[in-house]
Image 1 (cartoon, rainbow, N blue to C red):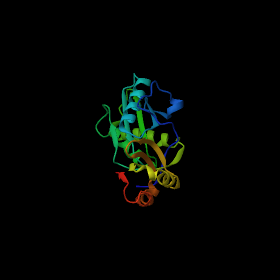
Image 2 (cartoon, helix red, strand yellow):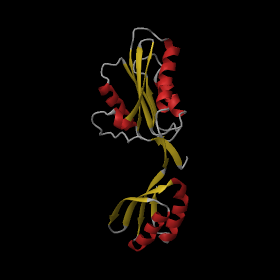
Image 3 (spheres, rainbow, N blue to C red):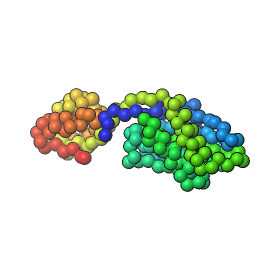
Image 4 (cartoon, helix red, strand yellow):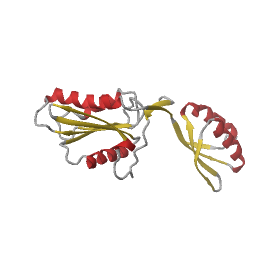
Length: 217
């Protein structure tokens, strides 16, 4: 798994997002093929839930479209651990799969595509449909500005009070972040550590807590 990866330079489409603003959340590519109108939208998502929320927002924005096809890659570029796609009534394998294949080979991670089609009365055939949906995503990807992100690993650290300063210095040295902290009988911190620093941080944590600290996972 790469420590650095490329994502679309767009605001994250959150699950609770209401309404839909093309200018704020997505890029858009539109073309007409044999009187059928295809509108492809791309958005930044990092979970299946956010991807599906984005698709629903696209349905709301274009409620009278004949089809609302979609695909997403929630992980890093080319990562197939969390992907999905739908033909939404088009012939099997002619919409969602070509869209997903284009996303997987597009060089970006954390991305969802929704393509709405207004049928123009002329059938395109299975090959024509596949090319139309794949090309829509390809052309939309060319409109996206990429940005390089650092991958963080989340871990929960538990240790004695006397080790707080040492652990915080260790986190700072690794350029990590303290996401949350609780002080009870021991100290519990939820930490985000850069992936490329994880091994070094874990070794340093053992020394900083004199072997008594716990990291989960």
